[in-house]
Image (cartoon, rainbow, N blue to C red):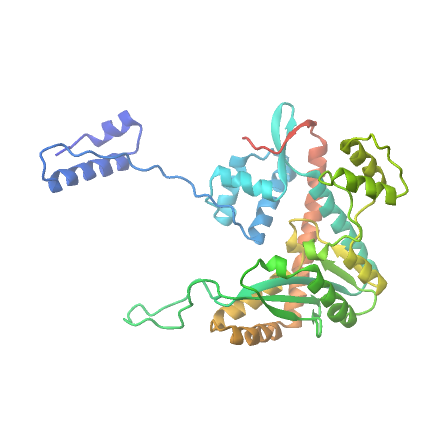
Length: 403
């Protein structure tokens, strides 16, 4: 039997006394149970590693963004370790540093150089898009009475609450057990204002099992709903807030990109009245095309303008500005509690859940979204003052993270 002096062993090996006791206990147990006279072989205890966590929901992604910008606001330089420790306290984040890198990249952060040191900063185009949206929303609230928010979501046939109370004294399982797998899926498209859902604007249909939901919720389906169910049921001169999903953002005219073939670039230029020389290289044609390219214009925006309305688009990664996200959470919570896991019942249950949402629920959701916009607007000003005081070498900027 091995009976070491625990304190001396721990100090000599630079591990805790608890670890030494655990190893000794394992060794003693092995000596008792092993029949062969040979000394048992012990393996080193596994190291505790942080989990790889990158699938944060939209709420927690917003917490991550505000946490990083909060360092700027306090005039501190954020690092991955500092951010990780603060998120551990705020949202019980227990992911590893590599997870933190991936999350920050996903929501639009990168590193620049400040006085030779790497400095975590938000991509300029994302910060600019957020600022433009916040300014536009402040303006439309003064000039327009009716603001319509639209969004789509989905619910799986086998959607249920993740946890519930159960009678552990009973030997028989109680309650309805959800089937394995997700089952078929219903796609839901709707819109609302601070006064509630728009009348006759709901669209609910079953998605095919052999495809991605985003592929089935395409521009044809969306534009038909937009023209026939939304625009015909909202007040005149409304503001319509939506995100930048591909089916919301079909361009009236595709702008040139570096992936275009040389012949396509040349054809595009000729349609613009430009006669490029035959000896121009593809790179030269692309640079020439950029001079004649205009800002993107979308089919949906044109449809809205022709009906006397105006579209305002959410900045990327900022779905929290759309109150419909909170409404969907309430709808899905209602469905999860009452779902029978039958598609025929699910369609009726979705309609029931939508009718359960009151104008008061919508008012609270809109007020919450507007409060977030006000908070972020104030934070952006503080961040701008701090970042402006730093000398950032954009030429040495990098999308790669290091701490």
